[in-house]
Image (cartoon, rainbow, N blue to C red; front, side, top):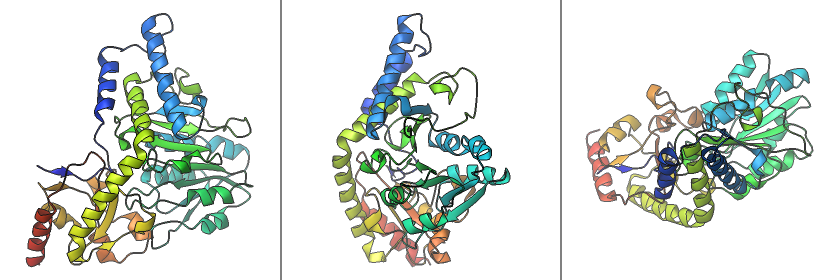
Length: 379
């Protein structure tokens, strides 16, 4: 049996989440926008309950939660949604980082083509961005600062609290791509200086196809976002379309479970990481990213002399792992994250990402070690 170790790409669904999704697909199938009968009323109430659970995770209000199809759409809405405001107010500068997910970097490239200037701050070799570097990049005409909460390839937690403190007196909006940290690095997201937060359900044991953009009010004022699509006025006019009630309910259940069991899950993941490090120790792996700053469910590493593609082939049938972001793995190129960290080329080419969770089955590490040794012997 192959053990799944690619939870940074997507996670298995919690049984309680699966049951809730199935119920609202088959029994409570009403449209939340139908106001003339009880099917619609129950669906609307279910959506509001899920909205409350997502809001609770980040100490927001239900009115500040906008449901989307996932973090990619949320990132696009946060970034491209501010374009009109920036153009009208001569604020055409954006600060972000070189290690962002493509769901941030590509919308930023679109903004650059329309006349915006984007400053991408490089990371340290340990995989995090220095708060001072963000502060130095911010200017009077800076519209937005967008920084990921946790890097999807290395698991390194970014110094969000410190960055928020440095932006305390600056009017720039502060956006977080929290796809990898939502429900795991919880306290950080409760900081009221963070204006917008992107999240996906399928990263926290919920269904694919649903996420949220939390849009906090600032001094009781709405953030001036322009919607990306129109036709129905759902989600306070920011995201038109019939709400996928079953997915939203699943997202709500997954969020509530994550909030309740976060410490327990983290402890299980730390124990699993200890086993990984112990098993790989004879190969003297190079860990990419400061382990002291990483969430406990992921390791990105390379072993001298081993190419990542060959290693994944050798481990096929035993463990399912990756060598980077799932969103770009079909057209694999060397990791822009590891390149930005200025790692040696051989380490980048050999990089392997293992990511697990509290639902992960035990791994026969003896078999993994034997397969890697056999691979080494053939070199």
